[in-house]
Structures are given as C-alpha cells and as structure tokens.
Amino acid sequence: MFPDIPEYQIFKLTPNTVAKRTWEMDEDAVDSIEANALKIVFEKTTIPVPRLRRVVHNNGRFLLVMDFVKGKTLAEVWSSLSLWRKLHVAFTLRGYIRQLRRRLRAFPTDPPGPISYAKPQECISPLFTQIQPYRGPFASYADLSTFFNDRCQMACRDAEKCGGRAPVGSFDNSEPLVFTHQDLNPRNIILGDDGRLWIVDWAWAGFYPPWFEHSSMLIQEENEVLVMHGSKHALWRALIPFICGPYFRQHEWWGRMASSFGYK
Image: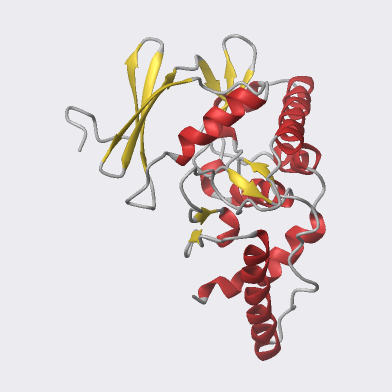
C-alpha cells in the first residue's frame, strides 16, 4: 500500500503537479500501461498531454506523478462555446487522431491492446461492453479478429432464434493496428488556460483497429457520463465521424452482434 495517500484516484500534490493512482489487471505487472501510453504520445507526437514526472510501483499498483493541466474540461465549457469554436475543437481533435494513426502504428508482430514491455496485456474497450470490458490477452491481431468473429456467429444464431437482424460480414481487420485512446469524451479533453486542447486519461489506450476510436466515441456519447451540464449535445455526436473517420459500417456491424457478449 502507499502510505498517506488519499483513497480517491487523482489528487493534487503541488500547485503544478498531480498524482493518479492506477490499478493493473495483471497483479504481477512490472510497468504501468497508462504511464507507457503517456510516454509514447509525449515523445512521438505533438498532442498536448500531461508530462509524466515519476512512476511509483507498489504491490501491483502504480502512482503516476504528472504535470497539472490548468483549464476546464470540454464537458464544462462546451455549451458556452461558439459554433466556430466547437468546429475548431473538432478540427484539432481530428489532427490529433491523424497523428496517433500515422506516427504510432503497431508492427505486424505486435499484439493488440495496451503497451507493455513485459508481455501482452488484457485489453479493455467499450466495444467489449460493460458486461465484461476486459478481454484477452490476445497474442496477435488474428486472435482479436477470431474473438470478435466467434461472437458474431453467436449473434447470428441468436438472431435466427429470435427473429432479429443478424450482423452482416465479419470483423474489419483490413487496416493496421494504430494507437487509440478509446475514451475520448468531453471529460477527458481539457481546454487549457494556455489555449491548447489537452488530452488526459490514457488508461484505456492501446493498439486497435482505427475504427475502434469512432465506435468508442459513439458508445461513450450514449452513456450518461457524457451528459454535459444536464443535456446531451447533438453536435458533438455529429462531429464524431469527422474527428475519427466515418466508420458507419463497422459500427453497425458491432451494434448488431454486441448482444453476444453475454457469452463467455
């Protein structure tokens, strides 16, 4: 245990630094997947992310000490932004996604999921649904594809029994795995006092198909945690395909087979 550390997840250490407590699914983890994500994004892109200052490891838990970003979350200010400012935010996020996809592609031999320098880690994604959001680890892209295609077959059998609409096609693995945030919602986007748009909370980040970002944003937008000051914003949802790319077919396929995740 960390002595004298508050139980809440994020807390301020100094006026300019914060600490975040993280838990790894692997109790024997030797590195923090969120720390690894922050490091690679900071080093390989120009996306504003908190600079990691120190990582403390104790009994499978990690404490990440990083810079404090001064500003307000997009969830707090979105309603007050002009239409032009909202479109500027969308253009900026679109540029960030392009950087992640172009500069941080996985090698063909890399496993999908979080970055770990020890071994493949369990994947966490909204696309696994809330029933069991952690799956894997998957040794290869092919294994991830097989997992989803197996669930697709289950969904087809369910559709035949219940008269529902069966998913058409198979898991889209036509594009290389790219680095994906997977939790890009207004709570994790900060409009900094410096005028820059900062991205925080990289705990779900990892190498996934490009369309995962699009579907993750849509899924998160549907969750009540994305209600911004009491109301959902249609413009935010409408901008998601522009930000991440229009992966409508893949998201529809996922939606039709998602019920199969009740199986283990």
